[in-house]
Image 1 (cartoon, helix red, strand yellow):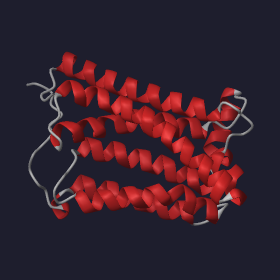
Image 2 (cartoon, rainbow, N blue to C red; image 1 turned 90 degrees about the vertical axis):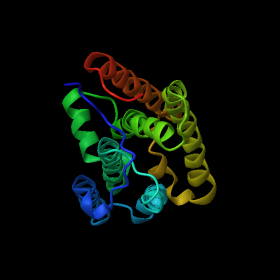
Image 3 (tube, one colour; image 1 turned 60 degrees about the vertical axis):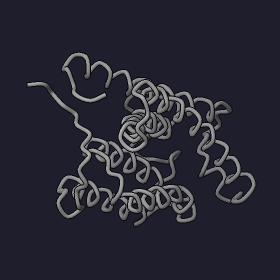
Image 4 (cartoon, rainbow, N blue to C red; image 1 turned 120 degrees about the vertical axis):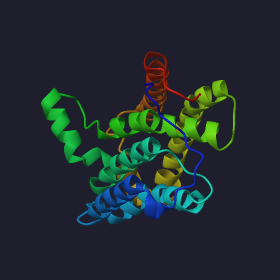
Length: 215
């Protein structure tokens, strides 16, 4: 029997999708926890602005467009990583400090983890969107997630600059979290880019080795 990662065309009401309800509940618990006891409330709202917009889009589009359970899982994991970072600010994240001590690193690398995860975890849902919703050719659906990850990452760095240096200077250092690295933006972009390439490579290998159905 062939291993499958199916992209179903069926419209499943939320009340009948047990996995999606679990993902939503898990994320909401983490989201509320990230707000309770946060170290900088103003920064928390800045960090979560895109989360509010993203969740609004997901909820608005659900009746017409639905991802697979695998894509919803990847999205949930990414959002949980992001909101956990917003609780303490990325530069002061406890897990990043633990990793720094355990691996004898020079800085708190939690922000690097999340930027890498942006490409690694969201490349597959983007691919699925292009194949399922927009009916793009398979080769376009493979290349666009990588290109979009690169361009969105660069655009996000511009947003960070505008927020930190133009609109909310008081939260600038906490929001950027550069930790004195003048190449922080470029490294963040590169990690997201590499993450998307690794993700698409893994899916390609899985398709060929296990004869996965679909494009």
